Length: 238
Image (cartoon, rainbow, N blue to C red; front, side):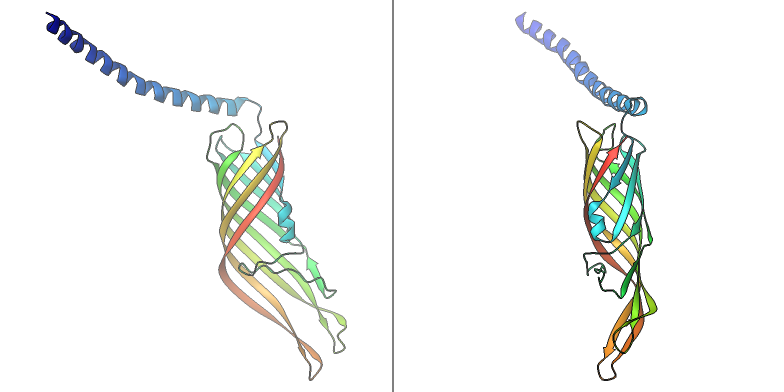
């Protein structure tokens, strides 16, 4: 009798346990769906940061002054654009073709427009644009300057040649953006690689010591080179 009772208990317990185990999986899926729905509802209704203006202090040393605007499109996706002007470059990167600008009186920097357009995907769910992210971006840069010619005595004349470096970049970044816990200020640290399409018109200046004459030529180059980027942005969200 004891054995039959044991068998009966096991037979009745197994189906119940099986039903209990199968009932947990739909529950977990429901919790995940409820969390995502609640996150989407908070993003749609709660007053949170969805717009950010940012500055990039390090870009100034590379010869650019851009103003960035980021707009959150969903809890994970955002678009980032920037407009600015190119200025004097203080540092060079021979690998990508960047060269520092000369401070001599014979060089006049010409401010030209710059533009950035990109999309950013955050790797974690959040109702505000923060956390680790991946980003793709297109960038247009035009670094131009006038090189004034010299006469036989070495003095500058009013005649000038335009030296220009036009870059069209396709860039890929990985970075981390964080909002302050007590205010809407934020920082954004990133690094990445890119493919740079260069269109260069470089002014070459030479002195013939025998004739004491300066000669000038404009050398044109069109090529593609890899480029590397590292920077930090500081911004304010609203």
